Amino acid sequence: MAETRDIPEMAAEFFGLAKRYLRDRTLVPAKRLGRLAAFSLMASIMFVLATLFLSVAVMRVIVGAMPDGAIWSGLGYIASAIALLVLTALIMWRAAR
Image (cartoon, rainbow, N blue to C red; front, top):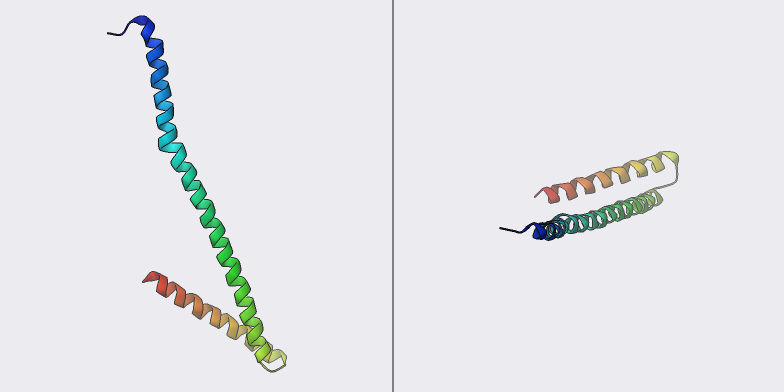
C-alpha cells in the first residue's frame, strides 16, 4: 500500500501521463486533420478559379469565332454554356464510376 507522502507524487505522475496521452491521441491528429482540410480547401479554390478562367477563355474563343452581330454573340454565349455543362456532366459521370 502506498504511503501518504507518495500519493501527491503518484497523482502528479498520473496527471502528467494523462496530459501526454490526451495530447498524443487528440491534439496531434486534430492538427494533422486541420492541415489536411486547409490544403484541400485551397486546392478546391484553385480548381474553381482554373475552371472559371478556362471557361471564360473558351467562351471568348467561341464568341470570337462567330460572325459579328448581337444574335451571333448571344448564340456564342449559349454554345459556351452548353459546352461547359456537357464537360461538367462528363466529369461527374467519370467521377461516379
